[in-house]
Length: 454
Image (cartoon, rainbow, N blue to C red; front, side):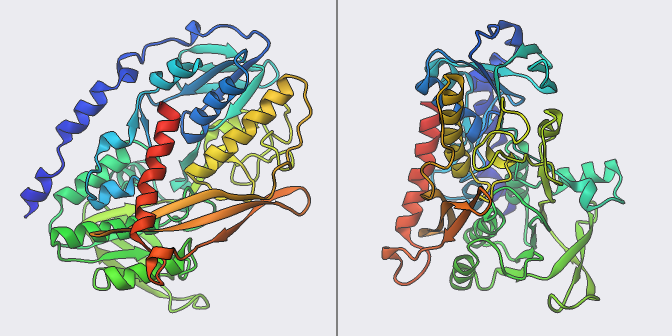
């Protein structure tokens, strides 16, 4: 059985997809090739959903803008919808998630620089990268997240962190982590899969660990793998789309998924393939019981922190490094020429791909108005109904999905907040999940990829 599962996923195919990306072949393009500022220069750091969307939106709003995107990866890879790759859903392959950065830059008239940012001088308004330096009039920061293994496990050595991060890939940052997880699933025999959501703080795509639980369970069920998907959480069942996920787990995977909601992971031994944790009787229990679980695959998601690029910019941040905003705008509270979008903001809105797109369009209008001396009311259009729509696949045969929508609102003291709703679809027969929602999930993902790359 193990050989058959391995045969379903060819690493050679991954290599072929990557080699075919023009971005790889053209990665030597230098920052020096980017024109100097013309007085209307916008530099965007980060080529994710937020960065690519705002680059296109800026050029669409004002063709005279000089827009440059700086991204350290030479191939785009999407995190949204990627759990379906792990779930083994039909007609889902790696090439659904990757893109060539030079394609949209050429199509929409902005520049792309494949480089790592090493310094930001907000006084001189310059960005230094591994490919050289460039000036900006407006800087947009959309750098995403980083993992905080050291903060969560201060006694772990750098070597231990590296070992755990490679052996138990988190899969919240696009790239090799998803490929590694898929390979581990394809290579496994009977046994348990451990999924550990981030223990505290803000983290990317709050439903992601629980959608992954569904998709991995779907894979085990379809492949006839004997074992359980054990979720070691500490949220006592109070997580994103909880009622909808729990309903689908009970209906579709009652003998596969085991959710433990009051746990604290204390150690992982990748060589022995064991994870040690404290399981508490309830949230009031302070003692708990130490347990060790054997696993075949471990998906450990550490606490998130903001990308260090935000700190590099020298703007005001909160304790976790996320940018403090100027009211409900996407401008830094301490620098009128720096805007922040995506995961890095402190607005009370969910960090998701759709949110990043919404932020990007809104910030683009604010930037264009600023550069053209026009007034802009950052509260205009609030509340914004269904500003974030987030889908999660929960079943594969038949395909079914659940969803949550968020209305973004004007909160107290000129802050931005959100109100969530998890609807039951008309075709769900009283359930939260449905085939129609699964179809909408695929259509949403195809639509946003087409919007960024077409």
